[in-house]
Image (cartoon, rainbow over all chains, first blue to last red):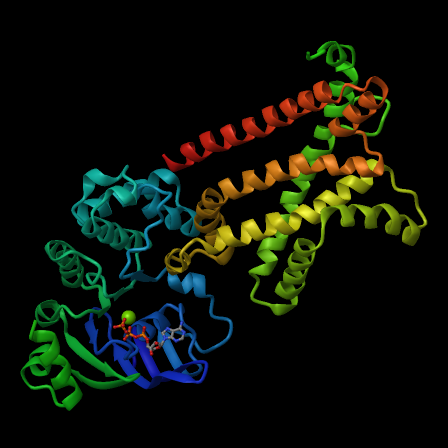
Amino acid sequence: MAGAAIEFEGVSKWFGNHQVLTDIDLAIVPGEVVVVCGPSGSGKSTLIRCVNGLEPFQRGDLVVLGDSLASAGVRMPALRTRVGMVFQSFNLFPHMTVLENITLAPVRVRGLSATEAEKTARTLLERVRIPDKAGNYPANLSGGQQQRVAIARALAMQPKIMLFDEPTSALDPEMINEVLDVMTDLAKEGMTMMVVTHEMGFARRVAHRVVFMDAGRVVEEAKPEAFFAAPKSDRAKDFLSKILSH
Amino acid sequence: MLDLGVIVANFKFLVVQGLFGLGGFAGGTLRLAIPAIVLGFVLGIFIGLARLARSRFVSLPATLYVEFFRGVPLVMVIFWIWFIIPQLLRLPIPEYGVALTAFVIFEAAYFGEIIRAGIQSVPRGQVEAATAVGLTSAQTMRFVVLPQAIRNMVPALVTQMIVLFKDTSLASIIGYVDLTKAAQIVNNREIKPFELYLFIAVVYFVFTYSMSLFARRFERRLAS
Ligand SMILES: Nc1ncnc2c1ncn2[C@@H]1O[C@H](COP(=O)(O)OP(=O)(O)OP(=O)(O)O)[C@@H](O)[C@H]1O
Ligand SMILES: [Mg+2]
């Protein structure tokens, strides 16, 4: 598809002999928000980790912002500055303050001055609604606050795409919404987003498309209304009944 | 009764020669221990990193090195270098050179293991997060992994440095005049083993205890 921000073209991946992605074809256009769901072990994390090259794949091609990841010579660190990622377990750097977490890459990779980077970081902290935590260490923040710092850290590189791998799964229920709200803002601002999540309310409200995976394949993709109202595959029906029943 | 006169009379020989190594003999505990710690640590960094290398051509020799030197007694390594290397090179090596080489080679295996374990103690998610924001692997190592790894390594590193410091007394078997050997020389003349060996025990203890105090303070500073 011309103009896609992310395009999987027959991507297959194996861990040893175990195939975890099978012939994935999927195109995501700029500004689109795609929620990826599916049972545990279906390959959701692997799928989005391919997009920024954290996982290599063995067959097919994946074109991210015009760069083909299958071709030799693509400079991964440069590409990664244009693709932000947020992890389930936050992965903040524990030996750095919130501010240092956010400014590390802009200073070391982009070459910004410390003052410039700090200014951007403070703006981002406003945006994720924790402007007063700049000097704290991650250990002194709640899970929801840590995850919002992780989002700010990714945004500091001014990425064109944001990847989220179960960003709220490690959070206490009362903190889930503060993170989802920040993600909703981001979606409204037109960020291209791939979000692995089981937060079906978020998918319904924010996603443009839901992709359902099972056993390493994309089994179904549909607009959220259609997907939730009438999933086509039995496996999606089964999955939704389990997810929505609690 | 303790006759501390023997210590006072031989203080200069014991301390200046035996401890610091400033004197006519090739010797000195500190003159051996300090470079051995520094060089052993530096070599250990390379060995620890090599063990973690993705390429087997790099990691396998490093693993063999570590397993080998952890599996043989230090005294034997000292003897090898003392007897075998000069024959191979047809070159006499002074006691100091032999002792330093032996300690650096031997201790680097232990330091390498501590460094490897320290680096591996940093969760994989840290590397992934650093990679994901665009840091190169060298930058990830420098800004994210090593600062955390070093913090985790400090207790084990200091323990190893203390062990090395005390083990330098083994160099006396090839005639190297360290603190232990100096005490032995004086004792052969004066026959005051109780006073002499008590004195050097106190000296060793003062040094090792200050090392652990320093380490504890350093750890506390890192933790805050
Ligand atoms: N590093 C790895 N080495 C070997 N197998 C792996 C590795 N990572 C994942 N797998 C396997 O790949 C498959 C897909 O894993 P993946 O983590 O992508 O699933 P997921 O859909 O994200 O699951 P979850 O909902 O539990 O996070 C699983 O069978 C998993 O066991
Ligand atoms: Mg997963």
